[in-house]
Length: 312
Image 1 (tube, rainbow, N blue to C red):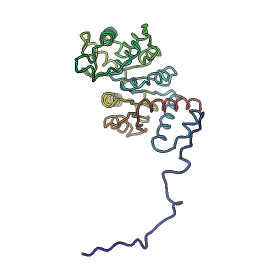
Image 2: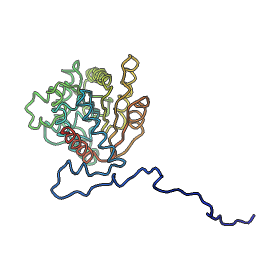
Image 3: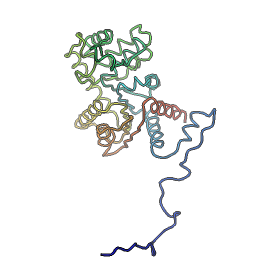
């Protein structure tokens, strides 16, 4: 068989003016001017892809807040290590964040920040000599607080301990801020994953009771998400799984949680949060978003967009 080049003669075309296009010049960025405002910067972002999603998420949070709907934040420990705690605390104190859910590492970093003004030890240098995770105050004070306040839940037990302490940086504690504002701050642990679990004062029964109490409290938060927003920031496994179980529990009990906004924020988009937070929960209604980037950049951007949105 002999092959001959195909000619494009007779090709059917149309005018670009009649074509549906996904990008228009009205969506383009506006150059930032030196000395400009945050509102001007945000308003100058391209109305395209992730920038558009960022503003849509901020609007969903602001709208939910103005309606009195629930805005819940689920978070991993890296959010604290990236220096974002003051932003979360401010949103709690403004009444914008209605509830916080954490994995176990958050408690360690939240406590250490409040107690010592530092956290995130150098694992590489400590692991080889068996010293990783061996800070006495972290292990003893957290475990004592959990044992003392297990019936109130793990988050409230540690939050009350920090809030009533004289720790020099207790104003940087998310758990203490939640306790002062009397909002749920739940902690969902996997036994053996956190450094406080290897301390001799660790009480597995108290820890399990406290975390199970927090799961039930978190389920109550999830039951109130109709018309609200759930943000998963920096937890790739624990909180997406806990969120999905809480959601199926409350739906099974007859609570309507269908039309709400979910968001996954992380510097990598993993399977579980995309499936268990963004896609599955909103399959019957609502909207799921994914915002990709480092917490120390994306969290301040979202925070600024929310604060500016409150002034509209």
